[in-house]
Length: 337
Image 1 (cartoon, rainbow, N blue to C red):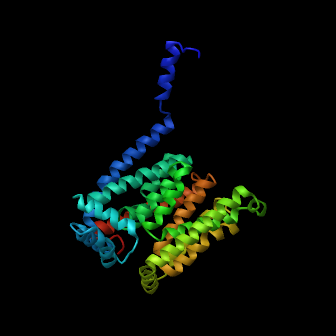
Image 2: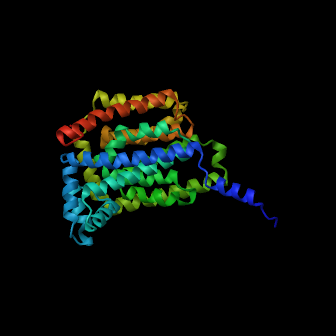
Image 3: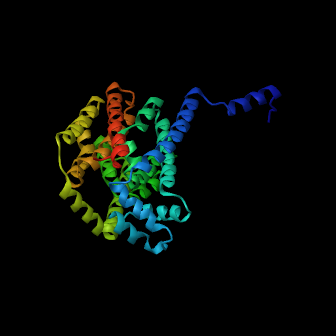
């Protein structure tokens, strides 16, 4: 083996520790936004004492000194939810002595880091991450929808980590929030619509597709068998209180227009949006519109249109919408007033 000269050895050592400009910008932005997320979370969570947070705060207090065997019972009583992993992780932090706001703020930092890494891996520009970190739905996940946030942490890890680990986090995500199944149905039908007839005959396509279908079927059966009653109670509750407004309808139409403007064929878009439309009817628009936004985000990343001016306008709109939500938290103790 040829021995390297001292000069060449030193040069290779330097190159191994060299960070490119793009990587440096991304690392700096992720660190900066993570720090801001932590302190902003502490401020907002200290004010967010009404709405859903009233029940989640009481649930966290009830977990302190509670035996592990009572976690699911307490979660169902206080929050009306049955997803197992959220309760057990909350129990762990509660019994380690963490105050709830600190616990949620730390998981918010993790969420920010993971989303940043996923966007960086997708080839996005830092401005997209900056707009997404101030996005209305992002801030809702940081403050109000904490169960769903844990699910989206796993979902973002699917795109941030190597392919071999994706199936693990994809399977874990719904155990934090069953609403992720709507996300999966949307992505599955959208991907199916993108395939051509001849692709379905290929073993490389047919085998993963069949495997995913089987996993999805057994997962759905497990969820229904294990948690069916509280899930159907939730559906009934949401269906009884949902109110459709012109603003809700305009949001859905807006997402469709943006998707078409990004060059997505209508037939494919219909496949992506069909499960979301069903979800809107059952769960109400406010809860499912977030899934619609995430779907458009994934589609934009897939077709390399994250820097499309129309998509940037959409991101800017949702960042502007955050102002009112934050104002409601500081004024009324609830973002949804």
